[in-house]
Image 1: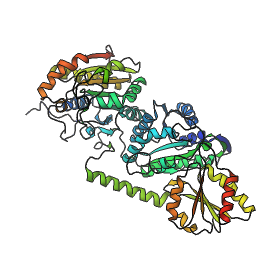
Image 2: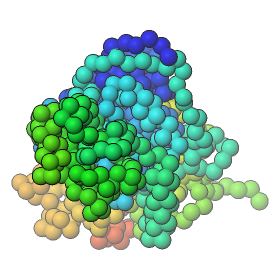
Image 3: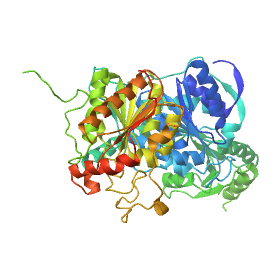
Image 4: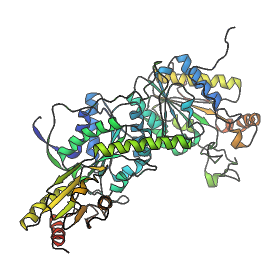
Length: 353
Length: 248
């Protein structure tokens, strides 16, 4: 490992992508993720890569679709309203099985909402904001170091499964500066891309990238193939951090920035004689359902905390399937759940309220 | 016996699904003949649109990418930026290019993307059964302008070649027609030149091809050709709009 340096989250995402071998970036300006474009615009020129500021988010994702068809490692980044615009291209890319990395640094909504951090796009990204039966691999980092590591990993996962991968971070993660330590060499997986449309060179029959299957049986067969791929991803790629859960009175479920607030709550609660655990999903899809089985009977129940009106909490309830109480605490509009408020709820739950 | 006429290599053996009298078949053949003559099939990636030609990836023998409605120029941009030494073309209709995909075509031309667009203008939406297109002529009856296109209600038909010719990134823009043998020969020359402009790295190139839609126009194929000559050619004059003196 190299030395620790201080960097902004958004710039670390861009640097990680370059280290992962991404030489093609298509984006459109939107707060609070724009530093990714700034970094890419400068670096791509220096290293002979492609940075292109598209005319819209719609165009940007379709440029990604084209570049991914050619088999190169490619990325786009945006924030909530921009991700709404990209949904068309995301659905097509999932169907056409194109590897790509999409960064969503979430801001508060709905509508133009505001530019402050939020987690209100969990439904959109995790449950599929586009049309059709598809899943994206969704990674949820909680620190700048993890933004780096998961962005590199995102490119490997995208290639391995021929599937779009989303880095879902809130505005805090993109905007904050933190120490990051880069590896000397990245673990880049080489994927076989003999499906890519690069020109057949007279050496094979033509390759086709498509997302249309007019014959119902052919389309159903394609859907079944996608579902089988998703099953394998669930089996192999589900990740979560389980912290302090053994013997806990209450387990809090949180991801991203909120999980860091919860870690402080755990220390505060300990002083009051309450043991609080944390389950932090790192893959939001696939959701780490099985992790919940071990702690399903925790005495005082579960609390889900989000910067939303309550979205991931639905997956927590599904994972527990009625086996325990699930409370929810959320803030919206760019506000963050405070340590004090979470502690108060945890204490009430420990008290049997 | 000497072979004097055969299917171009750049077309597959798959039979076209187009309606009787539709001119897409002619235009496909012209594109394929040009690909053969320039010997670029192995280096070419085409982009299929949404519309009647959504599945022309089954007809062209080169690598093909199917794009979302109107997004072909953006998809082609991604392809070309990833494969700068390859030839990339889009094949789009007037609903795809001149309505839902207006932003994508204008900005691909603005950037001077080194791609070639074959723009087929038949003044109507074909695949969805004959709705008014941005290119529908004033007075023309369609399923969504049942009393004829009225400027006060629907605006005027858009002249894409003239519009794109104002952009500095566009190197070569020509409007042709496939209504007669003479015009088909001219159309092929234009398509060839458009690909040559791309090969020379000169910028964006587009050929607008006036075409018929007998099914949705409600006319016989022969009458459709007459209607094209008598009505479309007047509103959409044939000729080179950009790059007239370009040497390739």
